Image (cartoon, rainbow, N blue to C red; front, side, top):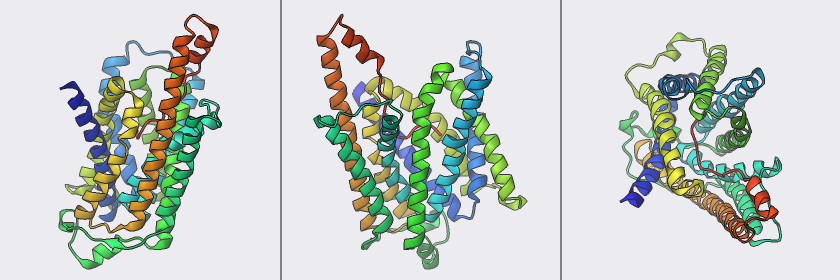
Length: 361
C-alpha cells in the first residue's frame, strides 16, 4: 500500500504542475496581465506559507546575517521574480504544451550548471559520463525541434467554452506563428535556465540558513515585493489589477496555494521515500497531462513538432538521470569496499547536486 501511495503522490504532483501551465495560459488568454498575475501568485504563496513557517520554525530560526540576506534577495530576484516573469511572457507567446515540454530540460540544465560550478563531476571515459553528455545534447536538440519545427496539426475534442468563447477565431488565435513560437520557446528555455540556477545556488545558501520553510517563505515575500515593483512600473491601469470571480482568481489561487503549498509537502515526502531521481523521472507526466487537457479545454493545436521535440527532451532527461544513477551506484559500491579508508570519506564529502524535477516557485 505504501508503494501505491508514492506513485499516486507523484502523479498528483505532476498533474498539479500540468494544471499550473494550463490555468496560467487560460488566464493570459482571458486578457490578464502577466506581471500582475505573477505578483498575485507570489503574494498568495507568501500568505499561505507564512503561518506555517512562523509556527514550525520561528522559535528555532538560525541567525540571519546581512550577507546571507543579500544572497537570498538576489536569489529571489533571479530565481523567482525574473524567472516567473519571463516564463509568463514565454507562455503567452507559445502554449501550455510547449511550456510543459520545455520543463523537461530543467534537470538537465541543473546538472549542466552544477557541472560548470564544479558541484558535479563528469567522467568522459565512463558509460555514465557518455550518457550525461548524450542527455545534454538531446535536450538541446529537443528544444530546437520544439522551436523550429511545427509539422502536421492534430485536433482533439474541444471544449473551449470551459475557459472562454467557443469560436473559430479564438481557436486560431491560440495557434502561435513561427516567429512567436521561437520567441516563446527561447523565453521558456531562459526561464528554466534561471530556475536551474536557483536550484544550484540555493544549495550553498541553505548551508548558511538551514531553516528550509523560513528560507522559502522569505524568498516568496521578497519576490512579492520585487514583482510588485516590476508590475506597477509596467501596468498602472487599475482595471488590469482586478481579479473578480473568474479564471483569473482561480489561476492565482491555484498557482499560489496549491502549486506552492501542496507540492512543497508532497515533493519533500516523495524525495524522503524514493529519492530525487524517482521524482525527476516522473517529470514527463507533466507534458502528457498538459498536452491532453490543453487540447480539450483550451483548444490548443498539438503539432508533430511538439510531440517529437517533447519525446527527444524526455529521452535526454532519462539519459542524464540514468548516467547519474549509475554513477551514484558505482560510488556507493566503491565506498563500501573502502570502509575505514580515506577514499571513502572523500566520496562522502563530495555530494553532487540533485537533479530534481520542478520544485516550488
